[in-house]
Length: 471
Image 1 (spheres, one colour):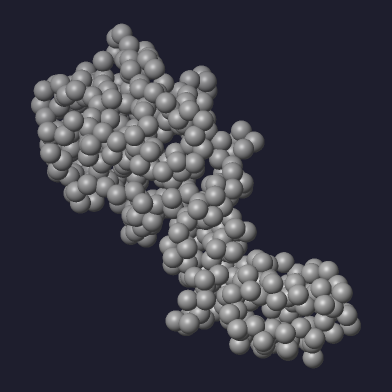
Image 2: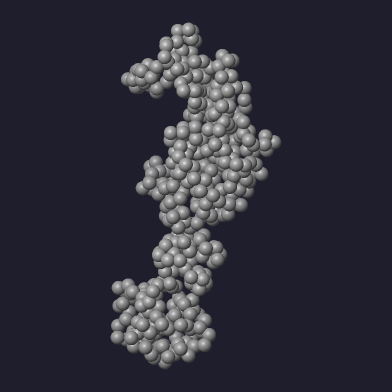
């Protein structure tokens, strides 16, 4: 467990019943930024008490997603199920102190309560029928649950770091179950005990947990424990203001990796979903750690916009170091080519990076744009590229080949000068030569600078491609 001497201790506590979605990733990120910026401790706790819904694949996806995103945690990964004996002991202590009781209500009776509440247009709540009843009246063959004896008078107020003071009348909070009839602890009990035992100082989570916090606060009071500071973050909506769904791009974090987003760009974008610092749009995680405050989180839902993420990713691609970008993009390029790159091709890819990264917003786009450098000969031409090979275009290329063979340096500027002189001598504009030259080299009518392409391909490969298309 955590060392209680740390001033700030936070946790990210996902349920492993599904993959790490974009909202969960942002919650983890906000906890991480808040803690790392204050020299505190950030813990990862997998809340796997519901063994039927918890899967190994989901646990691996959560851990893998956080790791790829660049969010690290302190200590080992904690699994809530390992502490179930401690959770049961706390429930038994409350029972012994008279702050909890055994409830023998049958499933049929609970179903009746639900129907009655629904008919009256009221929220479903347990009616407390076993709260002060003599256990001697317990029916045979019914295993009881243990319920918290909730305070029924006055109100419960949470001083939330994001939402402000939020109050609910206690008579709206029924006596929640602590232990199920099979003796297993409920989420509400487990999370309170674990947060206390781990010395969690701040619980930063989605505002869909706000109603849970009232019940959890009652449990803290019953145990004479000090509640943590709660900070409930508004949920993420789509750009149209509707609840975020797959049509808005609400995918698992692993999908953004597969779509070619850089983790540093996604961290930057998620930081801005519901929080901001002055007018800064592009900033490092180190800066975000320094600037991040709970008071800076907005009270309204943030809007997820895939186009804005894409544009931001493009900024990060353009500013990335060529070697870093080449290593990140290589798996996408090899998937595009359906083969691994040779050592010689890796060098070519790195050399091509300055021109390629100016025109891509994702690593997939970058890989597709780069694929012509490694295409098998003869190149297949796009329809627009073929249109550049009229009789004049082919004739110009045939006449250009001897001039190019004479070029000794094969550097970008030297090639530009060489082709310029050729165009002047031929009495045509540079573009009349560059168009068919680009098509011959790349198979397309668009690419980085044609002279950059030639420099990257090298003399032998460039001349081979030109000769194949010129004859």
